[in-house]
Amino acid sequence: QVQVVESGGGLVQAGGSLRLSCSASARTFSRYAMGWFRQAPGKEREFVAAIGWWSASSTFYADSVKGRFTISRDNAENTVYLQMNSLKPEDTALYYCAARLKAVAAMQGSDYDYWGQGTQVTVSS
Image 1 (cartoon, rainbow, N blue to C red):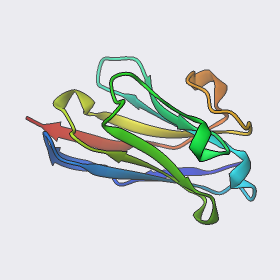
Image 2: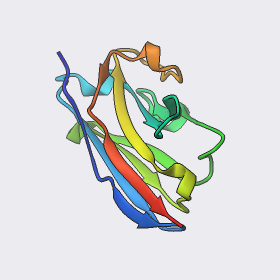
Image 3: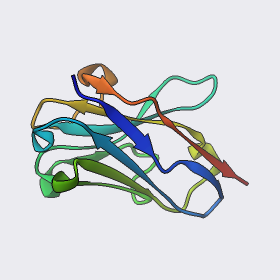
Image 4: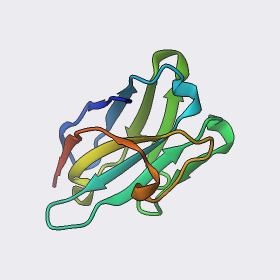
């Protein structure tokens, strides 16, 4: 069983930045593709970003965050990050981190095996 824990959420003004962190308890963390998803009140969960084993060639982003968010990973620290810049009120949501024991990242939530409890991001206008 892999435990996934997110942190770093908070309240920020529009145009500001936040960095989310996600730690996973997997002994072979480097073999897990990781993804970030978000869910706003009254809306369905949506894909944000994902990263495979090999960071440089296997990252994916939702169109809505491309150019503003950056996903990265530190396998030595068993951690994946989501750097969020130029935040907008529509980025307000509960952000979830997920893990899958595959080399390639996925953009569908159903493709992930382990999920965290989420961290709240609120962007004020």
